Image (cartoon, rainbow, N blue to C red; front, side, top):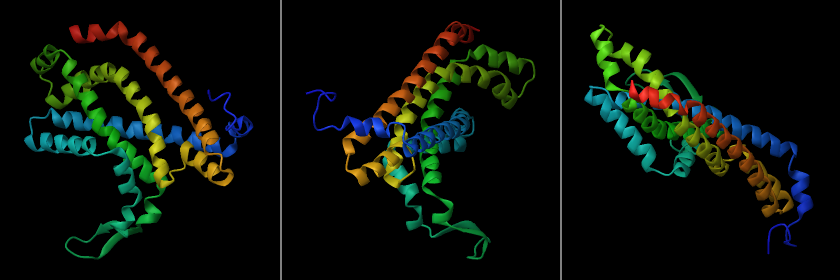
Length: 251
Protein backbone atom coordinates (compact mmCIF):
# COMPACT_ATOMS: atom_id res chain seq x y z
CA UNK A 1 0.00 0.00 0.00
CA UNK A 2 1.39 3.41 -0.93
CA UNK A 3 2.28 6.02 1.65
CA UNK A 4 -0.44 8.34 0.41
CA UNK A 5 -3.12 5.71 1.09
CA UNK A 6 -1.64 4.13 4.21
CA UNK A 7 -4.15 4.49 7.08
CA UNK A 8 -1.35 4.30 9.65
CA UNK A 9 0.01 7.66 8.54
CA UNK A 10 -1.58 10.83 9.87
CA UNK A 11 -1.32 13.16 6.90
CA UNK A 12 -2.64 16.05 8.95
CA UNK A 13 0.44 15.80 11.15
CA UNK A 14 2.68 16.04 8.09
CA UNK A 15 0.88 19.15 6.89
CA UNK A 16 0.91 20.65 10.38
CA UNK A 17 4.64 20.33 10.91
CA UNK A 18 5.86 20.91 7.36
CA UNK A 19 6.46 24.60 8.08
CA UNK A 20 6.61 24.45 11.88
CA UNK A 21 9.05 26.96 13.43
CA UNK A 22 11.19 24.19 14.94
CA UNK A 23 11.45 22.42 11.58
CA UNK A 24 12.37 25.64 9.78
CA UNK A 25 14.96 26.40 12.46
CA UNK A 26 16.45 22.94 11.94
CA UNK A 27 16.40 23.50 8.19
CA UNK A 28 18.31 26.75 8.64
CA UNK A 29 20.88 25.01 10.84
CA UNK A 30 21.29 22.25 8.26
CA UNK A 31 22.01 24.78 5.52
CA UNK A 32 24.44 26.68 7.76
CA UNK A 33 26.22 23.46 8.69
CA UNK A 34 26.54 22.43 5.05
CA UNK A 35 27.79 25.83 3.85
CA UNK A 36 30.35 26.32 6.63
CA UNK A 37 31.56 22.72 6.40
CA UNK A 38 31.88 23.00 2.62
CA UNK A 39 33.92 26.21 3.01
CA UNK A 40 36.19 24.57 5.59
CA UNK A 41 36.52 21.51 3.37
CA UNK A 42 37.38 23.57 0.28
CA UNK A 43 40.01 25.72 1.98
CA UNK A 44 41.65 22.92 3.95
CA UNK A 45 41.27 20.50 1.04
CA UNK A 46 43.10 22.92 -1.26
CA UNK A 47 45.95 23.19 1.25
CA UNK A 48 46.10 19.40 1.54
CA UNK A 49 46.11 19.00 -2.24
CA UNK A 50 49.03 21.40 -2.62
CA UNK A 51 50.86 19.60 0.19
CA UNK A 52 50.27 16.26 -1.51
CA UNK A 53 51.91 17.55 -4.70
CA UNK A 54 54.78 19.23 -2.86
CA UNK A 55 58.41 18.23 -3.33
CA UNK A 56 58.70 18.09 0.46
CA UNK A 57 58.27 14.46 1.61
CA UNK A 58 57.10 15.54 5.07
CA UNK A 59 54.26 17.61 3.59
CA UNK A 60 53.30 14.77 1.24
CA UNK A 61 53.28 12.29 4.11
CA UNK A 62 51.20 14.59 6.35
CA UNK A 63 48.61 15.18 3.62
CA UNK A 64 48.41 11.49 2.69
CA UNK A 65 48.06 10.49 6.36
CA UNK A 66 45.29 13.03 6.95
CA UNK A 67 43.36 11.84 3.89
CA UNK A 68 43.87 8.19 4.84
CA UNK A 69 42.63 8.73 8.40
CA UNK A 70 39.55 10.81 7.65
CA UNK A 71 38.45 8.85 4.59
CA UNK A 72 39.14 5.53 6.25
CA UNK A 73 36.94 6.03 9.32
CA UNK A 74 33.14 6.44 9.28
CA UNK A 75 31.86 10.01 9.45
CA UNK A 76 29.43 8.94 12.18
CA UNK A 77 32.35 7.83 14.37
CA UNK A 78 34.12 11.14 13.80
CA UNK A 79 30.97 13.05 14.79
CA UNK A 80 30.66 11.00 17.98
CA UNK A 81 34.31 11.61 18.87
CA UNK A 82 33.98 15.38 18.49
CA UNK A 83 30.66 15.36 20.31
CA UNK A 84 32.18 13.48 23.24
CA UNK A 85 35.56 15.19 23.27
CA UNK A 86 35.02 16.22 26.91
CA UNK A 87 35.37 12.56 27.87
CA UNK A 88 39.00 12.77 26.70
CA UNK A 89 39.84 16.33 27.67
CA UNK A 90 37.97 18.13 30.44
CA UNK A 91 39.55 21.43 29.45
CA UNK A 92 41.18 22.73 26.27
CA UNK A 93 43.71 25.52 26.13
CA UNK A 94 47.28 26.70 25.71
CA UNK A 95 49.77 25.76 28.43
CA UNK A 96 53.27 26.84 29.36
CA UNK A 97 55.62 24.40 27.62
CA UNK A 98 56.54 21.36 29.74
CA UNK A 99 54.19 22.44 32.56
CA UNK A 100 50.53 22.19 33.52
CA UNK A 101 50.25 25.96 33.91
CA UNK A 102 47.48 27.22 31.58
CA UNK A 103 47.85 30.44 29.62
CA UNK A 104 44.33 30.16 28.24
CA UNK A 105 41.93 27.43 29.27
CA UNK A 106 38.30 26.62 28.45
CA UNK A 107 35.81 24.05 29.60
CA UNK A 108 35.55 21.58 26.73
CA UNK A 109 31.77 21.26 26.87
CA UNK A 110 31.41 25.05 26.77
CA UNK A 111 33.86 25.42 23.88
CA UNK A 112 32.90 22.40 21.75
CA UNK A 113 29.13 22.75 21.62
CA UNK A 114 27.09 20.31 19.51
CA UNK A 115 27.04 22.85 16.67
CA UNK A 116 30.80 23.40 16.82
CA UNK A 117 31.40 19.64 17.03
CA UNK A 118 29.18 19.16 13.99
CA UNK A 119 31.08 21.76 11.95
CA UNK A 120 34.45 20.30 12.95
CA UNK A 121 33.44 16.75 12.10
CA UNK A 122 31.79 17.60 8.79
CA UNK A 123 34.38 20.18 7.71
CA UNK A 124 37.45 18.11 8.51
CA UNK A 125 35.94 15.03 6.88
CA UNK A 126 34.95 17.05 3.82
CA UNK A 127 38.53 18.32 3.48
CA UNK A 128 39.80 14.79 2.97
CA UNK A 129 37.51 14.33 -0.03
CA UNK A 130 37.99 17.85 -1.39
CA UNK A 131 41.76 17.39 -1.33
CA UNK A 132 41.44 14.60 -3.89
CA UNK A 133 39.05 16.64 -6.03
CA UNK A 134 41.35 19.68 -6.03
CA UNK A 135 44.42 17.51 -6.61
CA UNK A 136 42.83 15.97 -9.68
CA UNK A 137 42.00 19.48 -10.89
CA UNK A 138 45.61 20.57 -10.43
CA UNK A 139 46.85 17.54 -12.35
CA UNK A 140 44.40 18.38 -15.16
CA UNK A 141 46.08 21.73 -15.83
CA UNK A 142 48.45 21.53 -18.78
CA UNK A 143 52.02 21.02 -17.56
CA UNK A 144 53.22 23.34 -20.30
CA UNK A 145 51.77 26.32 -18.44
CA UNK A 146 53.89 25.51 -15.40
CA UNK A 147 57.00 25.23 -17.55
CA UNK A 148 56.19 28.53 -19.24
CA UNK A 149 55.71 30.25 -15.89
CA UNK A 150 59.06 29.00 -14.65
CA UNK A 151 60.71 30.11 -17.88
CA UNK A 152 59.39 33.60 -17.12
CA UNK A 153 61.05 33.46 -13.71
CA UNK A 154 57.97 32.84 -11.54
CA UNK A 155 58.55 30.86 -8.38
CA UNK A 156 56.74 27.62 -7.70
CA UNK A 157 54.48 29.25 -5.12
CA UNK A 158 53.49 32.11 -7.39
CA UNK A 159 52.88 29.72 -10.26
CA UNK A 160 50.63 27.60 -8.09
CA UNK A 161 48.64 30.56 -6.70
CA UNK A 162 48.24 32.62 -9.87
CA UNK A 163 48.19 30.09 -12.69
CA UNK A 164 47.51 26.53 -11.57
CA UNK A 165 45.04 26.88 -8.68
CA UNK A 166 42.57 29.26 -10.41
CA UNK A 167 42.22 26.82 -13.32
CA UNK A 168 42.16 23.77 -11.05
CA UNK A 169 39.33 25.21 -8.95
CA UNK A 170 37.30 25.93 -12.09
CA UNK A 171 37.76 22.32 -13.17
CA UNK A 172 36.80 21.15 -9.67
CA UNK A 173 33.50 23.08 -9.51
CA UNK A 174 31.21 20.30 -10.89
CA UNK A 175 32.55 17.56 -8.57
CA UNK A 176 32.58 20.07 -5.70
CA UNK A 177 28.87 20.80 -6.18
CA UNK A 178 28.19 17.06 -6.33
CA UNK A 179 30.13 16.61 -3.09
CA UNK A 180 28.11 19.44 -1.55
CA UNK A 181 24.92 17.51 -2.32
CA UNK A 182 26.32 14.54 -0.41
CA UNK A 183 27.31 16.86 2.42
CA UNK A 184 23.75 18.18 2.72
CA UNK A 185 22.50 14.65 3.34
CA UNK A 186 25.41 13.85 5.66
CA UNK A 187 24.36 16.68 7.99
CA UNK A 188 21.57 14.39 9.20
CA UNK A 189 24.21 12.30 10.99
CA UNK A 190 24.84 15.07 13.53
CA UNK A 191 21.46 14.24 15.04
CA UNK A 192 23.33 11.64 17.12
CA UNK A 193 24.87 14.51 19.12
CA UNK A 194 21.76 16.73 18.97
CA UNK A 195 23.38 19.13 16.52
CA UNK A 196 20.21 21.17 16.11
CA UNK A 197 19.84 20.17 12.46
CA UNK A 198 16.67 19.33 10.57
CA UNK A 199 16.60 15.67 11.60
CA UNK A 200 17.30 16.54 15.24
CA UNK A 201 14.32 18.88 15.36
CA UNK A 202 12.10 16.32 13.62
CA UNK A 203 13.12 13.66 16.13
CA UNK A 204 12.49 16.03 19.05
CA UNK A 205 8.95 16.66 17.85
CA UNK A 206 8.39 12.96 17.18
CA UNK A 207 9.48 12.10 20.72
CA UNK A 208 6.70 14.27 22.08
CA UNK A 209 3.82 13.30 19.78
CA UNK A 210 5.01 9.75 18.87
CA UNK A 211 4.48 10.45 15.16
CA UNK A 212 7.90 9.20 14.10
CA UNK A 213 7.15 8.28 10.48
CA UNK A 214 5.27 11.50 9.84
CA UNK A 215 8.14 13.65 11.11
CA UNK A 216 10.67 11.61 9.16
CA UNK A 217 8.61 12.29 6.04
CA UNK A 218 8.63 15.99 6.87
CA UNK A 219 12.44 15.91 7.16
CA UNK A 220 12.71 13.87 3.96
CA UNK A 221 10.67 16.46 2.06
CA UNK A 222 13.08 19.23 3.02
CA UNK A 223 16.16 17.13 2.28
CA UNK A 224 14.73 16.38 -1.15
CA UNK A 225 14.13 20.09 -1.69
CA UNK A 226 17.69 20.99 -0.67
CA UNK A 227 19.37 18.28 -2.72
CA UNK A 228 17.19 19.13 -5.72
CA UNK A 229 18.32 22.75 -5.56
CA UNK A 230 21.91 21.60 -5.26
CA UNK A 231 21.53 19.26 -8.23
CA UNK A 232 20.07 22.07 -10.33
CA UNK A 233 23.06 24.20 -9.35
CA UNK A 234 25.38 21.39 -10.42
CA UNK A 235 23.74 21.15 -13.84
CA UNK A 236 23.94 24.92 -14.31
CA UNK A 237 27.62 24.94 -13.32
CA UNK A 238 28.43 22.05 -15.64
CA UNK A 239 26.59 23.68 -18.55
CA UNK A 240 28.25 27.05 -18.09
CA UNK A 241 31.69 25.54 -17.63
CA UNK A 242 31.27 22.88 -20.30
CA UNK A 243 32.67 25.05 -23.05
CA UNK A 244 35.45 26.36 -20.85
CA UNK A 245 36.83 23.15 -19.35
CA UNK A 246 38.17 21.66 -22.60
CA UNK A 247 39.93 24.96 -23.27
CA UNK A 248 41.57 24.86 -19.86
CA UNK A 249 42.82 21.32 -20.38
CA UNK A 250 44.11 21.98 -23.89
CA UNK A 251 46.19 25.09 -23.13
